[in-house]
Image 1 (cartoon, rainbow, N blue to C red):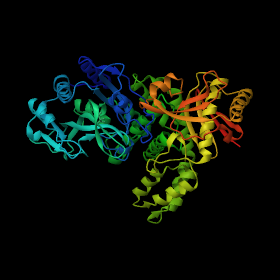
Image 2 (image 1 turned 120 degrees about the horizontal axis):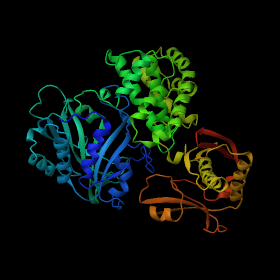
Image 3 (image 1 turned 120 degrees about the vertical axis):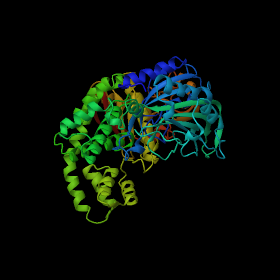
Image 4 (image 1 turned 60 degrees about the vertical axis):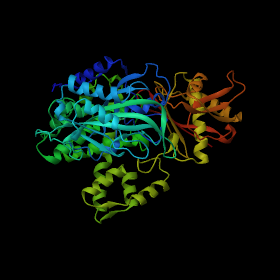
Amino acid sequence: MKQIISRQDFIKEYLEFFKSKQHHHIPSSSLIPENDHTVLFTTAGMHHLVPFLIGQKHPLGKRLVSVQKCIRTDDIDEVGDPFHHTFFEMLGNWSLGDYFKEDAIKFSFEFLTNVLKLPKEKLAVSCFAGDTDSPKDEKSEKIWLSLGIPKERIAFLPKVNNWWGPAGETGPCGPDTEIFYWSAKTKTPKSFNSEDERWVEIWNDVFMQYEKTKDGKYSPLQQKNVDTGMGVERTLAILNNLNDNYQTSIFQPIIKEIESISNIKYGKNKSDTRAMRIIADHIRAAVFILGDERAIIPSNIGQGYVLRRLIRRAIRYGKLLGIKENFTLKIAKVIIPTYPDYQELQRNHKFISEQLNEEELRFNQTLEKGLKKFREIATDNLISGKEAFLLFQSYGFPIEFTQELANEKGIKVDLEEYNSEFQKHQDLSRTASAGMFKSGLADDSEATRKLHTATHLLNEALRRVLSPDIKQKGSNITPERLRFDFNFPRKLTQEEIKKVEEVVNTIIKKSLSVKREEVPLQDALSSGAQAEFGAKYPELVSVYTIIDKDEKQGWYSKEICTGPHISNTSDLGHFKIVKEEAVAAGIRRIKAITE
Ligand code: SER
């Protein structure tokens, strides 16, 4: 086995290998997928490549290789063991209708055994067992056999194990073949048992050849693709003969910093070690979310809510380690230099620090009181939804956080009542379990539809009054007000605010109609529709246009957007900006209403 110590060296080997097989390197996409409202974060490289998996031509060709930053929140409760992470990096090679099973498997095998020099004797694989949607994958088995993987090291498993995708509810997916490595120091067993956790999955070759449709059917795609995924943290641990990802060079500086802040040795005590891993993992994920090219801040909605949960959970585990001082920032400072290849982290380091610090200060103000309240409440074997909501509303305890505290005491939380309490208060928050709202809207009521249209008017007005370079950086709408974040380096003057209001109100008074149409993405973009920078869109998008015959181009505003909107601006009433403030360096926030 080749010992590769650093993350950079390992990634370099991977990229070079696939470049030598004519793959083009594409940069990692944002952690926030666009136009897929069924997921909050990018969980794999495929999110951003969907258009190309279903037939659109990729400008760099049919063979791609990537290192994708991913967040999987499903695993949050598992974090604390040696292998699970919320944030991780995934290496992937892609065939967009080019090579298929034979080459994909041979490339994987060659890279593992020739480049990384993993002994073939320690490998095992699984293939898709077949069902009514897709046949048994005997082709992959044949290829593995031809490479010298013995029959007893090949398992056939059902869809729950050997099928990947779609990333959201619908889209490209297919059977896969997964590669496992015997991680224990003991002798490798003759046959493969997928239930034995000492067989660690290191690579997944997915044969993306179906599209899951809305009605739950699998229809063949017009091209057969390959999408592979290999976890950096996990494989690096294996290459260094470690059975704990947190002992790799990726995590060691972070763990050392936590040791020095807490004065506790990693690995000495089970619960402290778990706490240290949680802190390392969560702060690393928070750094990447805050540092993402799409500005995300801790909030009570969507990605911001997950971010808040991660930071607050890390802070609580810090308290459990006895850390008295504010510490998240110190850890972030060690994490950022570990990733010189993600320039967004360097670029946004000030923003990351500010946000972490603010969130920690905010939470520290209520944490102790909240914990006291929790202890008062937690005397029974059930915490009511109302009580859980109080902890959320007044002490900033995310519901999952309360559930975790309750769990530790063997107490249940009435989640149903909490959810209805939550709805009742028309709160903006949304939990992963409570489902997601479209377009940053808290609901689809008439009031939010109006404010959504007003948001488009505002977006364009800002471009006209301040700068054509203004881009939306976030939007959140409730029946009471709109909130709009955008890039601008300084505070707006009173005059500018007045001017923006005037532009919007003039458009409202003109009684312009709002038109929705479905058009191919390219047509939308070339017609001048606003799209978010760096966002991935499906081939067909809906475009909302506010028609204005007085304008040269025939419209006042045009945006790619999922809606919904009102049909005429005259329904809006008078537009008023009620607040203008900074949310971060270079990002302003406007709150506005219509009366
Ligand atoms: N999408 C697949 C996975 O996440 C392969 O990249 O495992």
